[in-house]
Length: 323
Ligand SMILES: Cc1cc2nc3c(=O)[nH]c(=O)nc-3n(C[C@H](O)[C@H](O)[C@H](O)COP(=O)(O)O)c2cc1C
Image (cartoon, rainbow, N blue to C red; front, top):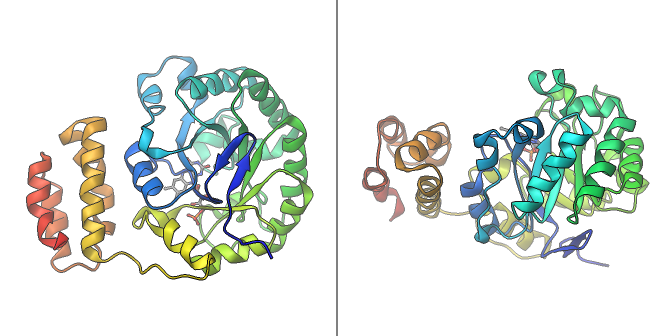
């Protein structure tokens, strides 16, 4: 029997393993992706970047394309509903050094859907196929697409969309096993995921609710070639190594509180390099509560963190937790 943990090819891109970091807006910036790559992810994915904003030269969106060598292979995820803007965005992603360009066809957020993008593309397989083929013709890097099993519960659109994507030239699919109406909560539909994985030859990354090796095994045994992990990585970017060890029959203990704090300090340094110290710390505010969770005096440290302006102050506050 082949191991569930294995190297995986997406088009011509060889990934060291089949465990990917799922794209998360507001979270998977370059700083976080460095931690996830160091934590064992075979592929990391950016936050979604607007193709229209890139087309109009939006500086913030172009900054989101900035990659670091320590990230390993990166997929830049773009969203939009206009095939020519998406083709241009694919070129921008390729020029930025992406190994892969990924299409967001699963975002349930109203603002995104109102523009015809994200999960709205699941209603329009011909448009989705047109977007994919225009992007494929515009770049040399593989084009992949991420969507959901359906829009509403009980709807299984995966096999049809996956075949359309494969025929249009997509090199892989990430399938979130929850319908768009469920956003990010509730169970995934394993049966639907298995049907989609069986419908195409290109690799399907199963996604949704995976927190450990048992969760990853369930998706891989259902026929997924790989697994994409979102929230379980947010406060434990080493979850990929833990899952890899578990899939290989081994055991890597979860990180101690001190390990986590050292990682968080590394994250703050990387954030400071990206955005400057003050802004980098401000961006980390919404995450600090989770990183400190369970540590003694966490509530006080959390509120003190909100007032910090320099990395030195952050180190002084958090050093007590790294020992
Ligand atoms: C805060 C947050 C932001 C997200 N942003 C994106 C995004 O930009 N693009 C995307 O395709 N999916 C996005 N997702 C969905 C995740 O990629 C993933 O499909 C979802 O969280 C389910 O996986 P999980 O249960 O492992 O977290 C986001 C999810 C969360 C929680």
